[in-house]
Length: 131
Image (cartoon, helix red, strand yellow):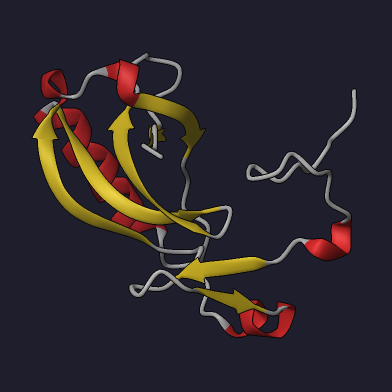
């Protein structure tokens, strides 16, 4: 098994130094970004989950879930909000639609509570991304 970089236009194999990251501009041109440009870009805050709204759990199809992660309070002082959200989701039968950073990429996620007696822990389920 090997990883080959091949140009889609002419089929030529490319060397590592011939590849760059860029952004397509509205006029059709390409703005090439250097490593320094990429390092200066702001990265999403990885310690925050922003709840956007709530849905009945029956409205969310599990086929749209990509990966699941168990949640817990990570910082001192986060235990109470975490417990309140967990209780509210469990009692209401709803899920929370939220945004957070997963591996430095801003992602749309669903927070839901697993009602199995031995778990009762919120899970964050990332949604499949359309490309």
